[in-house]
Length: 255
Image 1 (cartoon, one colour):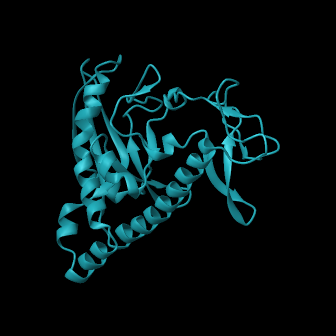
Image 2 (cartoon, one colour):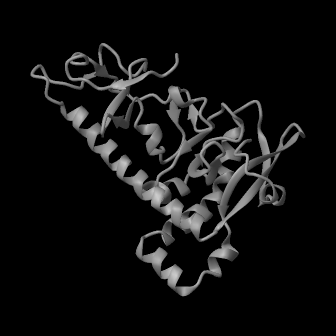
Image 3 (cartoon, rainbow, N blue to C red):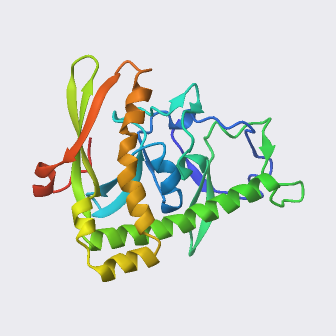
């Protein structure tokens, strides 16, 4: 069932309830998840984090790799998450923060199976937010703030010309091979060549730690290999290299 986000309304949704036990089945076909700077350190200990570029807007985004096959999330098994950290943009579902007129408002996917008759209410009988909803509101506020900081971080990284296109060579147990392209990550050589003033600027903005978290996260490709062993497309090994062809051609952000 397709998602249908609508503004959360205390009158229209006064009787709505959310499941007390969270299931991640809704994300089982999600192989990329938006990542925000607040969680880079935790994400880097569980999964690769890369940059992609939207060709329609020419904007860069940062995503966590949940798999190498489109429509396959290796981190979900029987509806449960198989890692120490879940991306915030997965956790937020079925809620979201979106423009609502001239301000930001809370939206819900009214078609989500996480809204159930025997769940936890979002509103009291008097129409006030319950503790459950208050917790979600605080989480969404933290996520929105982290996304704003992430946008500033991306701008700094792009302006400093620190990105390089990468290509992941994937070899499967059945002998087949493929290349995953359309992604970028930090070029360590360019980082080391930054002048002292720029390094200090990035450090004072709190961005140097984020840069190194992104670089270290590529070691988690081994985690994807491990998780793939439970699928019908088990991966034997993966190797990351510079994508020289992509660096010469327009970025296509595809796999």
